[in-house]
Image (cartoon, rainbow, N blue to C red; front, side, top):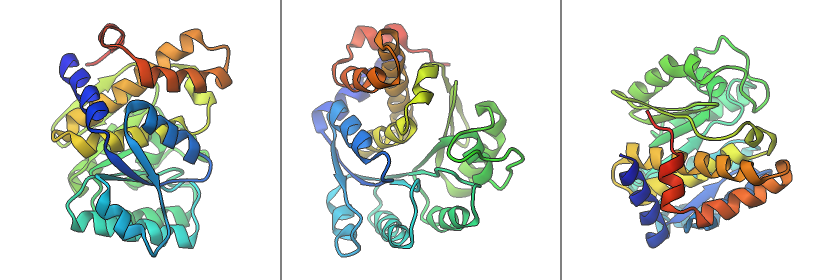
Length: 263
């Protein structure tokens, strides 16, 4: 399996998928650079007049609701609707789900367009499944990944999607399978937007890899491993950001296969 995941990383590099991002102000630069580092090509576009055309030329769509307003929400809905119509893959990052009624109503509308993948922390996944007994603390998780597994299964069945619960252990949930990834580093939580960058990276993988479970697993393994390796050499959150981008760009097969913790 590990070798298959490495081959998928090379597929992204060689095919350089074009990924349409409607994401939040805080992370635009981070996510675009992460996509470039893995060999993909980012487009950041949300104008109503062009959003459907952009969706048409790109191979996957990334929607991140971190900084919402009415204009951007309409952009997201137009893009998701058109992506579904074209039968292209897309990923939803439900940032801050459960924090406000506005976020929840927006997510309800977006979910009707059946995302291929949903990636969020445990609190966000619990909120998305309307099973949130642990409050969302802004965009930070106040729940552990394993607490959200049943909620993720519910979402997977209801919407026909894959769910990635991000945390100390990343858990990939499909309708019939659980995959655990134990890579990453605690320092990654001290850099804003790294989860959002992981979502964008997933967008590149689902764009060109037919098996979406393998695509999601490869993307999360790559991001966690690169974060773990970068943290070993970083002096703090600032250097971690730079070293993570470098490692996404230059990771070797040996590093990947020796570091991955998959079960």
